[in-house]
Image (cartoon, rainbow, N blue to C red; front, side, top):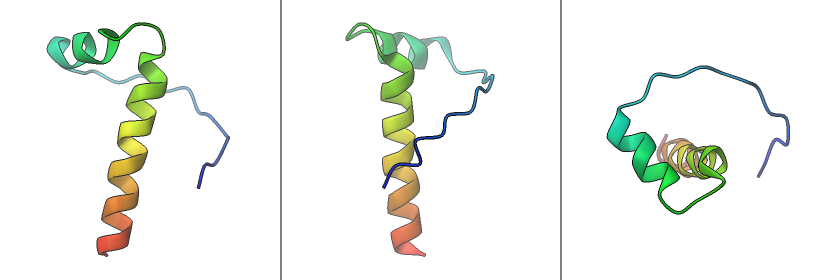
Length: 47
């Protein structure tokens, strides 16, 4: 399930978290979105 609609946001993240997201290369925002979506879906399933 993907909404397809993106919303620009500003977040303050720990520097080591940002470095970890950027380490594999381009697409760190997509990676962050995928990780958050997986967590969101897990919590929805548990509820």
